[in-house]
Image (cartoon, rainbow, N blue to C red; front, side):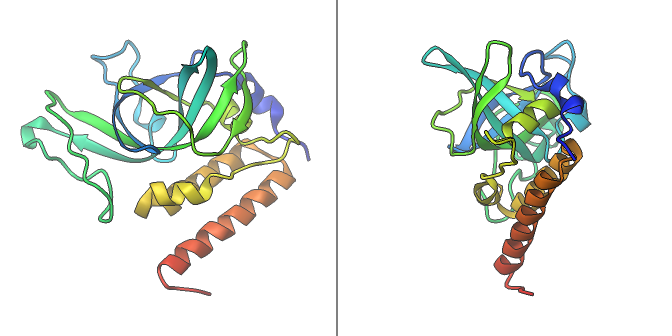
Amino acid sequence: MSTNTTDWAAEASVDDCLAIGRIVRSESHMDYIVEIHNSHDVERDPKPHEYGFGQPVFVHTTVDGSDYVVMGVIYDTQLIDPDQGRSGPRLAQDDQRQFTPGYVEEQTTFAGIALLGTAEVGPDGSINEPSHEMPPWTLAVDNTVLRCPDGVTAAFHTDESDGLRMAYWDRLLAVAGDLGTEVTLAMIRRLREIFDDDAKRDVLAVVERNVRWQASSDRGVLG
């Protein structure tokens, strides 16, 4: 069985992707907070399913004259209602820092983004030379965060031999904290929907077993 290329090739470009929000701060080099656009910010505001848990996203940036994308995934969200005070519920879980945004005038949604890696962008908007290493660059406040189409997600997870690569998973578990297992499994499910290649699905099965084993080990439950 071959890769499901015809289904996602048409979406394998970073051009004309939906802007879902802007970066407002970082929690670390790998962990960013995004304010989701509303109808006052943009002509076409994103719908809830377009910035949901496990949604791949990216920032398109230029470094030393070359175009790159910094890839990430939404691992948590927070709602702020100024009529109910300024503190709001926690973005992170018990073992992570509390996100306390500045003054907001209306109900606002924030999302936590864990970075996955980088890739070069070709003249046609295609993804080239994907890397699952820690991004070397720091993103900036007000950088636009875009919803990642399936084609870009597929290209980012495809290596030079047309195999599947998901080398960031151990780091994602750490960055996303208590939600690390769930967001990693959500990414695995998404990739299964994109690819119909048996070899790629075999790799996903191996990663899933490792993630579930690590989760069980961290809870002190083995077997």
